[in-house]
Image 1 (cartoon, rainbow, N blue to C red):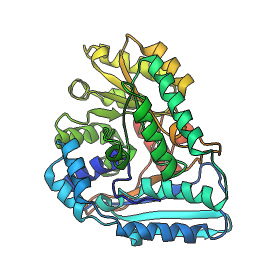
Image 2 (cartoon, helix red, strand yellow):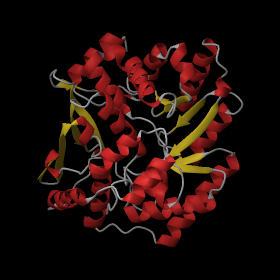
Image 3 (cartoon, rainbow, N blue to C red):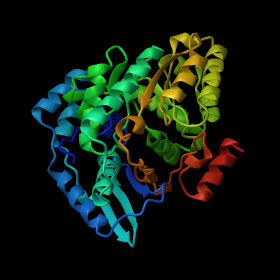
Length: 387
């Protein structure tokens, strides 16, 4: 189901590189959250354990290293040497099952455990469909659907990346979809978040950082400094490359209040991942105008639960006002005739250097996407003046 160490989201590798550089002693804990209330069959945890144990055999090949280094010259060669020596350690992953519920937890040094989230989620999805005997559509139908969708997006005159590794139906479906997007999406399809799929299709890996980057900064430096120092440290490592800033870890309103003129000019744009996309676009445009920056020189990457209808509304609202591009996830990789899973794995605690374990939370623009313990969420809202 996973046969390459690069079968993971690009932002996991870019964050791993930054963690190795800046926070090599930090530790992290992650936890599986079953948002969809899925019921897992008997023996699921045992099968998941077997699949996770198999990941320990993966290692970066010479060909993979060459592709990654050539495609991403802004990442130091020392990181690729590090990744070549990296091996998954299944002892960092704890799995149990009680009746039809499973528990998955991850703990260890952050620079190591950061790579677990995406492959474990994709394994859970693929095993779930297999062990519950849910039949997907045939390959020809999947290819036809991907072709229809990318041609629809082409008619809008926008650029589209594929962001669907975590909740894909399966590795096989993912591979079919990206190949179809590459074949039929000339001028529209610009790449994939999955580095392995990018290599197979000789396209570009897409991504920057994820919520956990700012969640860790909040644990280490406090909620008020999380966005500012998170972006400062990112620019310290990448010096202007990988310049799309994630905006909604502690609500976009708080983010824009801390996104000063220096950072607004330095970063190429922002990513929208929760809440109303049209309101977000208006806020971003207003923010850039207030800083004396032409919004058309900046880009919003929209990535929250996208389909054609939603993208079309965003395009109509934003065209001629601000740059835009789109990352489509599950709607590409799990539109195969079975219900997509609604699951996440989130960082729940961080241990910055020689400090202490500190709860981590996320306060997105959509309250239903908040994660973390209630007491810490209440504290963060009080500190950040969020109602």
